[in-house]
Each structure stands twice: as structure tokens, then as C-alpha cells.
Amino acid sequence: MAAVIPIPPAVRVWIATGHTDMRRGMNSLALLVQEAFRRDPHGGDLYVFRGKSGKLIKILWHDGLGMSLYAKRLERGRFLWPSSADGIVTITRAQLGYLLEGIDWRMPQHTWRPQAAG
Image (cartoon, rainbow, N blue to C red):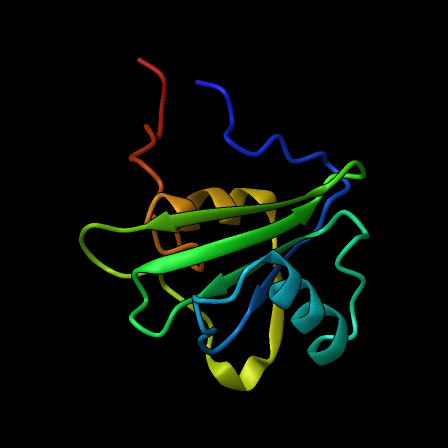
């Protein structure tokens, strides 16, 4: 299965803690990244925002050619999010994958692994 967002290895993933007004579009979110987080929204990093209900996230990304805005809504459950006291948090690409699957990205549960061969 191909990745929905082909994230280059050098890209950093930033989570905007707390909740964000999900009525915001890409221009408004880019301005938030620039003014509130003092980051360059056109620098190639991904910025992830969560709505108040916790069921919807938006991801802002500039790939060097243009700005993209991705959205995902969970039908059940909520996206696990860092405390709002943290401000903005960076996570790995693997953790983003867990987050998008609705898995606790802070402590994913690995499958059972055998202790010995045979």
C-alpha cells in the first residue's frame, strides 16, 4: 500500500498542541504556523492540528511546489494528543503513521515477538 503523504526522510513533523478551529483553511493555518509557532510554513515540514472534539485532524505541508492540506476524521475514538502546555511538539514519521491509524503514538503496542528460534 502506497503512503498517502510521501514524506521525504528529512521532513520534521510538528504537532500543534491544544485544539485548533477546524474551520481554518491552509492560508489561515500557515499564518498560525508563522506567527504563533515562529516556524516557516513553506519550509517543507508537516504541521498537524486537531479539532476540539478530537475526531478531526488537519495536516499542512508545503512540498516545494505548493501547499497541501490533508484532513482525517475518525468515525470512532479520538486522536491522542499531547498536553496543551507543551506548545508545539515534534514527532517522528513513524509516530505520525501511528497517529493517523488512531494508535497511541506515544507508546505503541508492538506485536508479540518470540524469545527463541525453534
